[in-house]
Length: 292
Image (cartoon, rainbow, N blue to C red; front, top):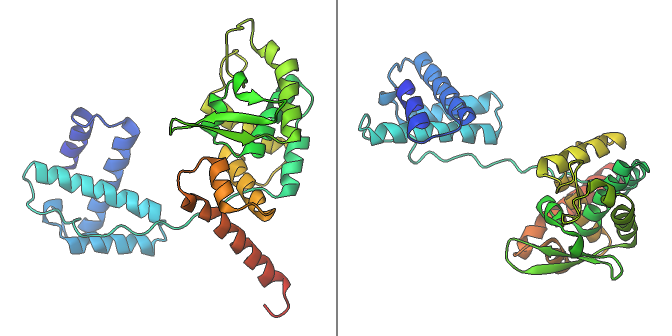
């Protein structure tokens, strides 16, 4: 049955090779567990068997995300068996997925931000990378917005950039003095070299092929910048965006303003930053107060 399921995923569902491999591995692992319980035919499994398997995964200290993935694979397997009328009931029906564990919000301290900026040298690459870092931290924009940014979207003299987000309306985001200086230096001293004669290219940030930097390219740049600054964290765009939000709140920004600056449609999306800030304050209190 499992081989037939795998063939179905490949030929009919046209799933990616890695996805098929994950489904197969999860279902075979479940089959091995059932064999150990004396159930040799997966068509005879009940919801009790599925729940017992989930308990075993928890006993093995598997994360909620891992358990959810395995349960999803088993659900798909039994949905396939039902579609082929091999089983009448899906034993995963009514089995609830475990709630995902909340991830700790990662962000940099003000000292780490200073280290990050100062670690970039005066080479062409260093000037470009410093401009990327300064713009990300000054504005809190998403990686996709930075990548999509064109030269015409930046008004350095007035100190703002224009972001065209997914909701088909532009928003104006202020640009602080250090970011303006770094961006101006990049635009006039480095970007013309990166263009490689392609004067029609509109993208603000270019790679060494003279075209718009890609998502993978941006993540690589930030990873290298983090290593150069000797940060204890793997730097990525989300960490800089989180740092922007946390530092804004620490310095008195209200949630409504933060929502508008970050381009969220719903103010509740900013609550995670407020919660993280309160948790950090509580941790500091617990460590520092003699009667905590």
